[in-house]
Length: 331
Ligand code: SF4
Ligand code: MG
Image (cartoon, rainbow, N blue to C red; front, side, top):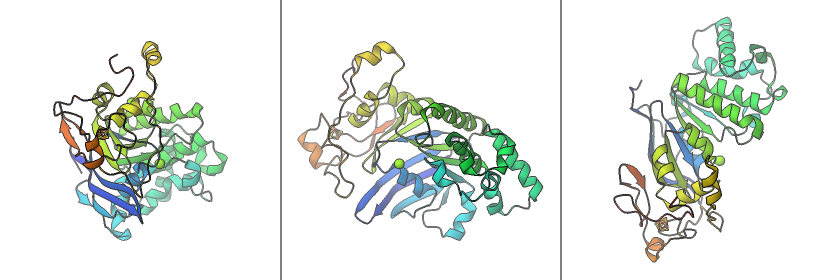
């Protein structure tokens, strides 16, 4: 067990290559107990692969994954079993991640069975009902099959299952993006409530920046397999330093209508370059509106600037000042 403020998860220079595809290329990140870290970036940035390495659905090519102080990077399936309790994952598509042949009660209760606790059947059934209630479902749902439920209900089932083993870390990979817009907010609110009540740490993988503003304590921005900026939610929303972070934020809705009207999203033009042959120097240089010749030659180090955020950009000064590519940057 870990005390407050201690890292639940530590990634050190994590690398995951699939053949020639450099999906994750040197990611170092810590998540402390009870903290929500949002991992953001466009699709293809490697953020889901980071999540899969953490729950060891894939074995990393290099680097380390430490969970509660234990190095799980290369543990065997058998050795991993003990640590499976400490970390759970919820996927984007609840239909694809729930076994259609199992009753909801079996799905939710399965982590208890895998733990091989001595809890008898009746005890287990009680715990399943309790966890269904906790995610806002009636206990009778236990007797139904996943396909009989709506998408939102299925994602609630996924959450109930993921939290059954009382993990210290939950990886939530785009948990609402496959759902109807009308139920996205409810599932997100549920995740936020559960996180606050239970206090698990969470790696929240998403491209939805309004969800990030609502849920995250820390934000890590990923571009083509690498982190380009990490900071607290307050810092990143108030002073995004990396041009890519600024571009992402320029496209996110803001509450103030006057500010909303004043802004134009920064269009990055070209698609994300291929992770098989990432650009030299700063990987963002092919799309960066303020790139200088140095950017194509020299890899910018991820370094601490200003009052504590970290950023990888040649043009950000040590005190944290630098270019802002947004149209309403002065507002
Ligand atoms: Fe843009 Fe250069 Fe900074 Fe990369 S290092 S974000 S290309 S200014
Ligand atoms: Mg993804």
